Length: 326
Ligand code: ASP
Figure 1 (cartoon, rainbow, N blue to C red):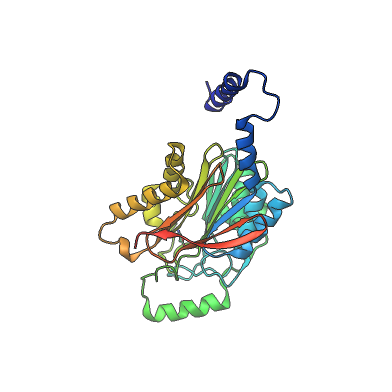
Figure 2 (cartoon, rainbow, N blue to C red):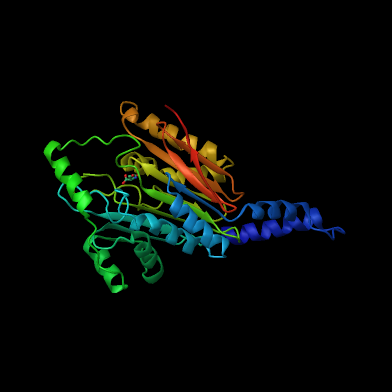
């Protein structure tokens, strides 16, 4: 029997057994669900991107579904040239190429991703087109750019004057040591739960500044930068993509929540595994997760102090400092 069918049938049976007598008013189970539903919609996003969470949150309040909200929300940062690690204005690789990576996931478990996108800032939207218009999950490089143009996306120059100036400075030193919490860590990962209690998520990034040409991080990798299961919850990541990929962190968090851990406990466990796997280097990089479950409970944890996330709920935007190990 398919899992969803099994759950539907067993929950129906459960209600039958518990509430089969003369219950006329709302059952305790329904009350509980109603209580949960009152928390919705909710938007959370990595780092302090209040304009992005507000955009998604307002759309959700107007009745938008989670997928539309998450796409429009992250697009705010993709278009902001002041953000040097997402979309237009992103820092280039060592050879001067600005390349974008993104993925998106819907409540149905469908997913799309793009990597090494060079000519369109709306990377999460292109990922959504891959999800909805192709039989594939991921498109890369030239093929991804061509697909975007065919889908009607405008061809853009992503390398801004300011990023070019920073790059020229970088070329003089050629140092490759990201400053924790400042440089390289502004990827936006967003999770939305809409009024119906359905989830969607997106993660979009220009990746590590001054990476080797061709490098792809965790952000577009389903299971690493983003994962969700509409029965359980979702998680997104930011920070050193190599460490996050090796731990398949977002998938791990959702699976830990499935086993009964709270979003906070699950995020802590995922960070502890990264620390354990990198005993000699973990103090030199940041890795952070945020997660939400179907009850609307939120968790967040990171290696180094300084990571925060935004939550938009009930018309209020809040920037919340994450718990950390060091
Ligand atoms: N996770 C991203 C990457 O490794 C970087 C970031 O979060 O800023 O590509």
